[in-house]
Amino acid sequence: PELPVRMGVHSGPVSAVTDLNDRTNAAGIGINVAQRVMDCGDSGHILLSKRVAEDLQQYGRWRPFLHDLGEVEMKHGVRVHVFNLYADGAGNPDLPEKLRQLKLTQRAGPTPASARPGDAEQEYFSDGISEDIITDLSKVSALHVVSRNTAFTFKGKPMDVRQIAAQLNISHVLEGSVRKAGGRVRITAQLIDGSNDSHVWAERYDRDLNDIFALQDEMSHAIVDALKVKLLPEEKRAIEKHGTENVDAYNIYLMARQARATGFEGDNRRSEVIVRLCRRATEIDPNYADAWALMALVEMLLHSTIARDSDGGLAAAERALSLNPELAEAHAVKARILSEEERHDEASKEIAIALSLDPESHEVNKCAAVLRFRQQQLEEAIRYFEKAVALEEMDFASAGLLITCYTALGDRAATKRAAQIALSRAEKVLAQDPNNGSAMGHGSDALAVLGQGERAKEWMERALLIDPENLAMRYNFACALANHLKDRDAALEMLGPAFEKIGAGLINHSKIDPDLDPLRDDPRFKAMLAAAETRLGLSS
Image (cartoon, rainbow, N blue to C red; front, side, top):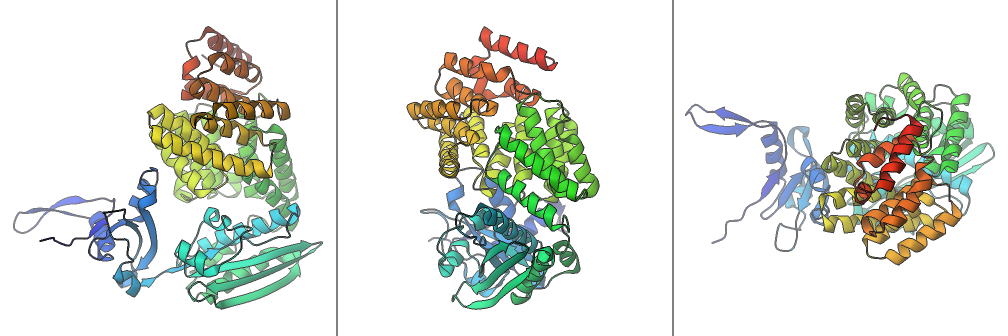
């Protein structure tokens, strides 16, 4: 006879206890949570807590078998976030009967507000408004809001509300549009029940642009009220807290943020544009912490890529933190800057603060990944790169660095998967921005991994004609040539002009980059590296 079983898995603290009969047992919050997770299941279910599922999501072979069931409210108001693990012949794919009966926390799925097609100005503004509304709603503990990354996968696509609701396991979908003209802004929004496609709430706002912050607050409160969830006082304060009250500064910051989202690393001209935009935003509002933090990030990347007389963004990061000590991105950027200066202990402390403040931030996870990579902790780096890739669908660079990590660890299957992701994302970016050197750099590496060497070289030739001064792109081409195409001479020829100009950050990175290991014993590489260190005043 078969014994029907169910499983609940959680990772947490346990301790040995002795009962009155001198029998040893295990107890603790870890077991309590595992019990609650198991209680959600029926026969055959293998249910995981969110903590365990997130650990498994770092590994490609597990990801297809993890299915998010959402947050479940059980007795005494206790909430657990549950994932169902199943595959052919293992687990139970059915929704547990107890979850059908228990009260699921409201799950909302905002989709990006539409803008006038082909209007770049409308697009950056509508994307910015959408992202801020997602952020505000995410602050409400009684709501489960899908991530920005998930929401933006539906951008520009026909809306089938029931299909989206079923696909994302959400109860409601929020859609709308944004139009900005002169000093006016018009926003339409509607909240739709995903089960029957009926409208729960709809509104059209036609306001002065100077009222945009009050309008965002009003919309967030209206959505919360329509969903009939409780807004705690501290959540209300968090929603109503804005980085700036100056519309002009906000508008310019949105331009900079949009440029950052499209992938620019290594493109010094685009980086300089972002710095100028952030600087202008901080001139208008010197207390705009978010703009200071973004400026710090891009200044750090510029300083790393090309030798320049600056502090690498440290002053801007510290200014951001002086204005808002709880700004996770500012702590993360400061960690990156300290890491560039080889101050790894201080950097580790800063990134720990950033992760505690906002563990779901794409920028924070990407910074954490780069930090661990620089400390040669590749398995930890993979953990954060994987999460960064999951959080931001346009992030081809993190996928590209996953190629490096998995190759160094000898995981061929994971290397190939990372290459497929990097190539797919690079191609999407290049379809919109054909001159994006960073995308071509990581994309060519992915092509080389996938056995498309000739196409990789074609990308390199085209990119060098378009943007010959993109030093980070040259560096990535050299990595592909050295490690995947096995062409040492071509790699050194590609690297030479870059090593004559790149900054200390990228030179230090090259010392520990596994992609360049095939070159380390070559006297030409040693001479290049020594010359760069002398130029920058670095120790060998």
